[in-house]
Length: 129
Image 1 (cartoon, rainbow, N blue to C red):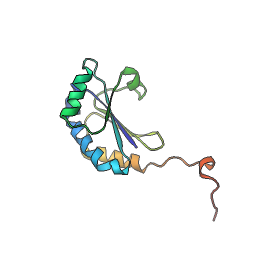
Image 2: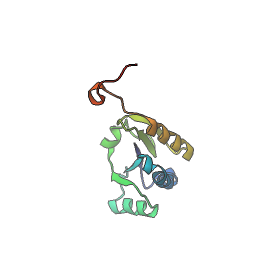
Image 3: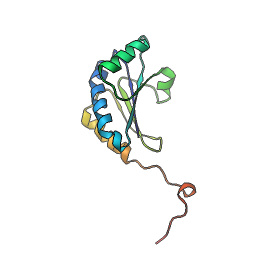
């Protein structure tokens, strides 16, 4: 499952959330969690974004996003904006703004538990009892 987090270097709540994401990546990666951070800084350079990530010891992939990417997820009304995407590629949950670490873990649990839809084409015939 993927936790997709839109953030920016100027975002105060993002500076609180990022260390939690580092911890959650360490804790849940063995269960299949992959975190991707999308920096939506209009004015920050790649070097400034990299410095921010290094300073906070980010241990997950960081990409530089744009408005078009944010719009693909329905827009980003506030940052941080976090999406929890299940193994089937569907958004299971989302959190706008800074929430508690427990809420993040609850949403990760939902996304990890979400099962891809089964189909007769990929799963073959099912036995009937």
